Length: 75
Image 1 (cartoon, rainbow, N blue to C red):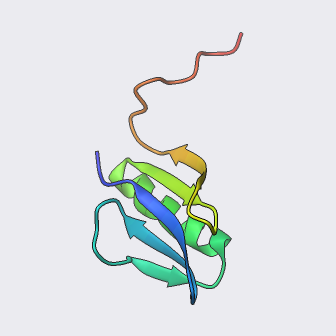
Image 2 (image 1 turned 30 degrees about the vertical axis):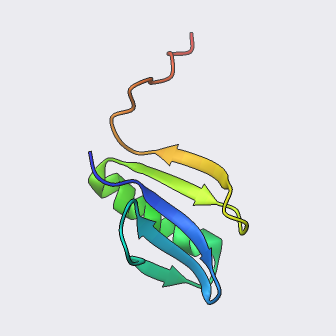
């Protein structure tokens, strides 16, 4: 499983940053653009996207890997 990808606010826009990386992977004008870029990386690495609010709090998470607790099948 790869590194989780975080979507975080920067003064210039929104960045994608791999978990525990010292530098941002990419910078985007909007949070949605950054989320899309992070999603592509997470799909390739079978990891999660963690979307942060402008104040740094986690807003949402999306898993694109081998989820240890997959949802139950709906019948």
